[in-house]
Image 1 (tube, rainbow, N blue to C red):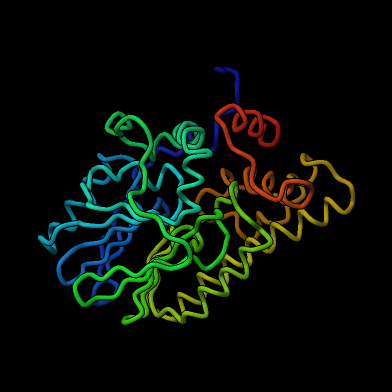
Image 2: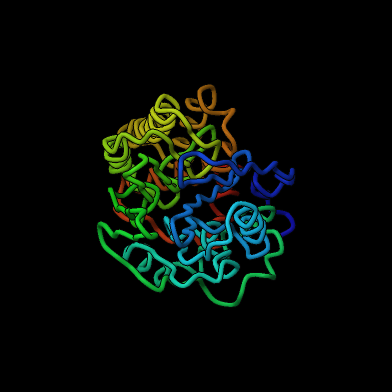
Amino acid sequence: MSHSKSFASQADLEEKKVTFSQISEHAWAYTAEGDPNTGIIIGDDAVLVADTQATPKMAADVVRRIREVTDKPIKYVVLTHYHAVRVLGASAYQPQQILASQDTYDLIVERGEQDKASEIGRFPRLFQNVETVPPGLTWPTMTFTGKMTVWLGKLEVQLLQLGRGHTKGDTVVWLPGEKTLLSGDLVEFGATPYAGDAYFKDWPQTLNNLAALQPRVLVPGRGAALTTPGDVAKGLQETRDFITDVYANVQMGVAAGKDLNTVYKDTFAALKPKYGHWVIFDHCIPFDVTRCYDEATQYTDPRIWTADRDRQMWETLAG
C-alpha cells in the first residue's frame, strides 16, 4: 500500500504537553492538547478512572499522576464507549471492575477487533508502545443499562446513558454532589468530533440532556477541561453546532441528489472556515461526512470501519 495517501493523523507526530489538574473536590482531569482525555474521581476509599488511554504504557503515566495525589486503590475503570483509543490501556490500572453500558459491550462483541486494527492504523502516535497492549480486547466485567450508581465510600458517582451520539453506547460519569461531568467524546472542546460511529439525528438532543444536568465543570473527550459554567455551555454549544452543521450540509447534498464525493467536498468547504482550526479537523471530516451520508441515505446504524474500508474511504475522499 506504499502508493496510498496516508491519513492526516499519520503525519501527526508532535508530542503533546500533558496537564493533570483538580477540577472539583473529588475530580481530576488528565488532558493533552486535544489528545484523548482521562477523567479521575478520587473517592473516600477508592479511585475511579474514566477512559484509560490507548496503551498500558500511556496509562502508566496516568497512574503515576494519580499516585502523586493519593495512594487509594484504583478499583474502577469506566469505559465511556468502545473505541480502542479509550480502552486498550485498561490493564495498567489492574482494576477490580471494568464498567460499561451493555450497548458498549455489544459494540465490542460486534466490532471491537476491526476497530482496534483500524484505529492503530489511523493514529500511530496515539498508540505509543502498542506492544504493551495485552492480546485480545478489553472486556467490561460489569454492564448496566440506563443508570448505575457507584459509591466510593460516601461519594455518589452516577454512570448515565443519556442518549446516543458519538456511539450508541455513550456513558457519562456524573458527580451530583459537585455538579461535575466526565462526558467522554459526546463533548469536545477545540477538537473536532469524530463521528464515524455516530448518530447525527440523536446527538444534539443527547447534548441537551447533558446540559439539563447543569454541570459546573466538565472533562470533555478531547480538549481542555471546562472549569466554569460558561465554558461548559460553550463546549456543549460548539459540539452541538458542529454536529448540526455537518448534518445540515450532508442532508442538503443528499436532497440535491449529489454523490458522497461531492457532498464531502461541499461540506469540507462549508465547515473549514468555522472549524478548520480545531484539532484533527482534516482527519475527522472524511469519516464524519461518510457516516452522515450513510445515515441520511440508507444506514440507520453505523457500518463497521475496517482497516481496508478506512483506506478506501481516505483514498476516495481525501485523495
